[in-house]
Image (tube, rainbow, N blue to C red; front, top):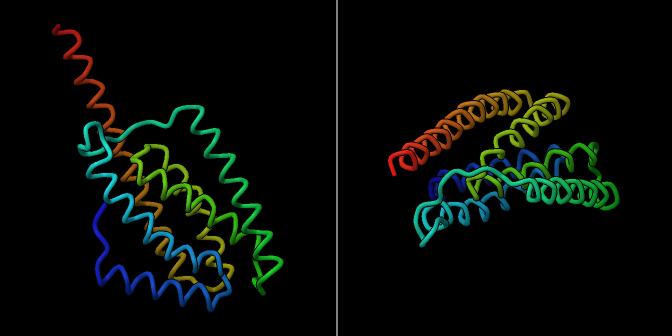
Length: 175
C-alpha cells in the first residue's frame, strides 16, 4: 500500500468535487476517509505483523465476518437515513449501499484480509450501475477497471496465502 502523495491528493479532491456535484455525498466524503484509512493501512502493512514486522495476508475468521457484515449493514442503514433526511441526494439508499461496503473493504484491505477483494468486487458492481445511472460513464469504466484489479489482487493474495501454507506444511513434515 503506497504512501499518499501530491497525485493522490489531487485524485481525492477531484473525485470529491465530481461526486459532490453528482449529489453522491457519501461517496464524496468517502474520498477523505480513504485517505485516513490508507495512512493507517500503509503503517499496518509495514508494522502490523508479529513483532512489528510486515503484515501477512490472512483469512477472516467466522466471528469477524459476522461482525463485519453486521457493521456494514448498520452503516448502510445509518448513511442511507442521514442522506435521505439531510441532503438532496437523488439516490440516498444506493449511495449508502456503496459507501458502507467500500469502508468495510478498505478496512479489510488495511488488515490484509483476503476476503476484502470479494467485498470490493460487490461494491464495484453496484458502483458501475450507479455511475451509469448518474451519467458518470467514464467513472463507471474506471470502476470496471477496478473490478479487474480486484480479480488480480485476489488471485495474487490467494497464491501468497497458499504458498505460505504449503511452505509451512513442508517445514512441519521435515521435522
